[in-house]
Amino acid sequence: MASYATPAQIIERYDVRDIGQLVADDDTQVAAGDLDDNTVLLAALADASGDIEAALLAGERYTVANLEGLTGNSASKLVRLTCDIAMAYLYGRRPAHDPDKLKAFEERAAKQLERLRKGENVFNLAPQKEAGRIDHATPSAADISKMQLLRDRCPGYYPKRTFPTN
Image (cartoon, rainbow, N blue to C red):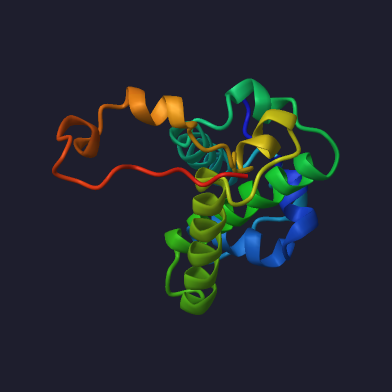
């Protein structure tokens, strides 16, 4: 399976000079035209996609098919998230390059993944949007009596249960 972002998409979102420096191990800068098949960049994007799948599948809100089928702004958000995490991996390879950016990318990516995993943020899929809605239904008097609560099992010890009338 391919990653959720391509080298061209990460170049659209971040400075190609930084990316070119971060993927090179010999203190040179990889040219923008050579990034499309750069193994370091492709590995960072694949690792980022794996992190996204691990977080969202653990939250049981999405499937891989859901993620692959995203369109529009939700697809763009998934690409951005993938690029953010990939940049954290790239800065992690060379932490002395810019430790502040490394920390910022790691914190932002972790926060976004956690919010998606918990369902605080959702991609534009109907079942996931509805998952965060709270059901306000309360049990009826008949349901409560079927529960065999302590008050019902010890008649005469607790006061009689009363129900509000509407």
